[in-house]
Image 1 (spheres, rainbow, N blue to C red):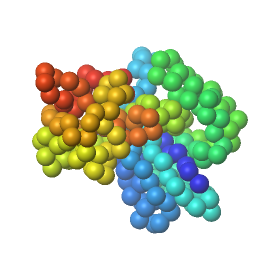
Image 2 (image 1 turned 180 degrees about the vertical axis):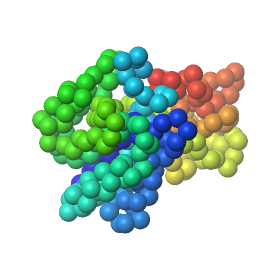
Image 3 (image 1 turned 45 degrees about the vertical axis):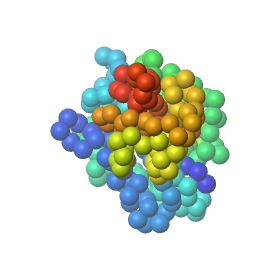
Image 4 (image 1 turned 90 degrees about the vertical axis):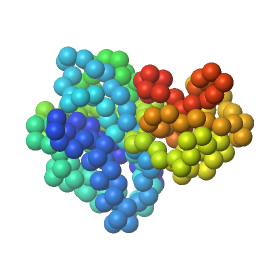
Length: 239
C-alpha cells in the first residue's frame, strides 16, 4: 500500500528541524524493513500573524510503500518518534494517509487553502475523520495537525514543494542526459515545463535543488544569456 507521511511544527529555534526529523523517521522505517521511502518534499504554508511557526511555516512530506500488515506498526513508530524527538515548546502534528482512502479533490483543496488562508484544527480533524486517515498532535497547542494534513494534499497535487537537500553533481556543466542519470533527478524542464534536448549543457550555479513537479523530482532550468542554468532561489519561491 502507498502511504503519505507528513509532519509539521516539530522544532524551535536552535533545535533540529522538521526535515531532519522526517529523515530520521525514514531511516528507522527502512532500517526495520517496514517499507521503502521516497525523498522528502518541503511545502510552504501561509505566513500570517495568527499562525505560530518557527521560521518558515513549512511541512515535510514523504511516501512509503509498505505491506498493509505494517500499517499499525508504522503509525505507532511515527507517533513515538515525534514524542521523543520534537522540540520542547513546539506544536507537532502527524498525518499518515493511505492513498486508497483519500478524497483527492478535498485534501488537495485543503492543502492549497493552507497556502493562502488561516485554517483551524477543527477543519483539519473533520476532513481527516471523513476520510478515515490518521491525524494526531504530539505536544503544545497541536496546531501542526493543520500543516501535516495540508502537506499531504500539496504533495498529492504533484505540483508543489521543494525536495529536501541540495544535490551533489560531479560536473559543473553536465548535459541534460547526464542529469537525468542522477538518482535524485527524474526530469529536467524549463520554467514553462518544456524539455530540452538531452545533449544540452546545463551550467550549475550555487545550490542545486529540485522541486516536486508533475509528481517527479524535477530540476528546473532557466536561460541566462546563451546558457541554461539551474533555477535560482527567486525562481523557486512559488514552490
